[in-house]
Length: 92
Image 1 (cartoon, rainbow, N blue to C red):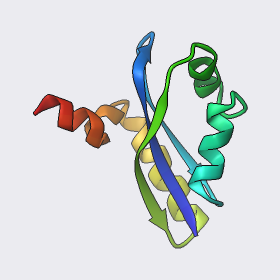
Image 2 (image 1 turned 180 degrees about the horizontal axis):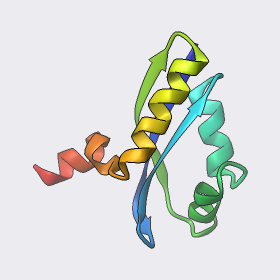
Image 3 (image 1 turned 180 degrees about the vertical axis):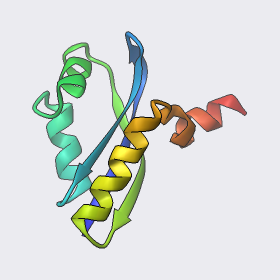
């Protein structure tokens, strides 16, 4: 079972406040890599800056292809904050 996850950064790094990713394995294991600086370039920079990142939301899919399409659609919006429950709670 594949998952797409949304990370919320406690403090923005330049313009970035979120990261959306995909994993065919467990989300926790993948996020552990991000937090250690061994994930994507953005999350590595966030980790190096000492910014805390939390799992804001996850979506589960039956197959990898479906998950990858959803991840791409989320990233293409360039508005991950609208999907983020942490940001929506702050706005209220």
